[in-house]
Amino acid sequence: MRMSTWMRQHLAALRALLVLTVITGIVYPVAVFAVGQVPGLKDRADGSLIEVDGKVVGSSLIGQPFTGADGAALVQYFQSRPSAAGELSADTGDGYDPLSTSASNLGPEDIRDVTVTDDAGDTVTKPGLLTTVCARSKEIADREGVDGRRPFCTEDGIGAVLSVIGPRDADGQVSRPVAVYSVNELCSRHPTPFLERYHGVAVRCASELGGYTEGRIVPIHGDGPAEPAVPADAVTASGSGLDPHISPEYATIQIARIARARGISEQRVSDLVEANTSGRVLGFLGEPTVDVVELNLALDRAHPYRG
Image (cartoon, rainbow, N blue to C red):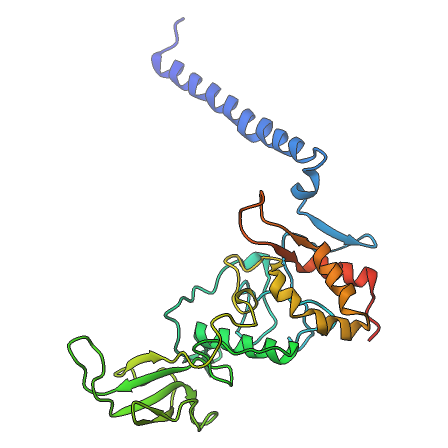
């Protein structure tokens, strides 16, 4: 008895389904797993986990914050770069959540602070990227004893941005300012603006954040150095929010604090930084990096904190 064309087609489709299921659902996963167990690859395949006394304390591929319960930096440890992965606000110690890997999605034009209503119905300040960077730079400068000045930042760690109100010319420039406001400096917190006068007009503090939209927004460069002492990776998050690396420059400005906290010479700390510094990939791609997680573990092994 001959099978119908319909039956032959469906049996062929069933055979193809079974073969592909075996190949893609069994053979391929087993092959990938087996390759991942090859010496030299097994550690990475298992997540590059770091164990201390038989206990997993982290991964060399995922950063973590070295802060206390209050979010303040622990003085005995090198600090990681900021993270927006699971971060609740700019001044919390949260972040580095592998389940919330993300960037802040803020860009160069996010230079104004605003007020927003949170889930509880409270009005809170949402700083723009500029103020976030300025505040981080000031915090690090105060902690490490270095110059925290940056272009377009006030001495108080706020974005130096003005709203210049007045008639405009054909190019959109304010030809004759009639009022000038420091849009990120609330009068309740900063009654004296960072700049006294702008083009002969007295600068006023802001009565509210997010206002004065009718004016032309003008960031003020100020006297911050072109190459700030606090490097960029110390004040900006990585794209994933999970990067465990910092630049050698950021590590260097932390050495003196670490040495004081652990009661050892700066040279000993510097030697550990160098030992945990990786060069450029293939000798020319990217920049040298320091793995903060591994560096702090090396510190604990060689020079335990006695505080």
